[in-house]
Image 1 (cartoon, rainbow, N blue to C red):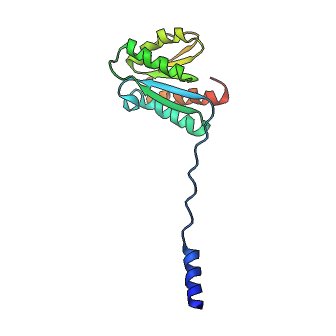
Image 2: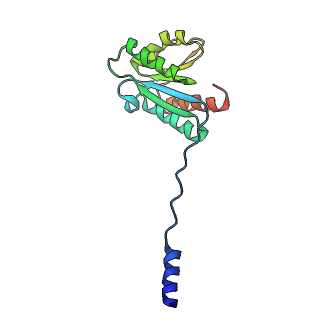
Length: 155
């Protein structure tokens, strides 16, 4: 009997602990959105922007998301995708790639309360900032700073 008790005790002591419940990441209320061309965040010009956004999200808990322009890579088509990001309540909308950056001009005028950041040649206005840095590290830093600014109220 003592041997059986010992076996049960050893079995109980060696039984693996239960896995901890997965925890959901707690995000802030702010959201930064990225609009890219049809290659998404895999495109060379989008990678550093998305990397910077993700880095900032990890440290600040600001939500980040991206959307790629599906279909023809025209300004008119990109405007539709850009408007959908605005309507999904993005606090700042970053754009990268030909059609997405060009679409900012018309879309920004229709949504004056939304902040846009174009990574590429664009015209700055009261709600559009332009980042023309071509160095990957500089672009990544700019994107990180924009997202981090949402958390600190410096957007």
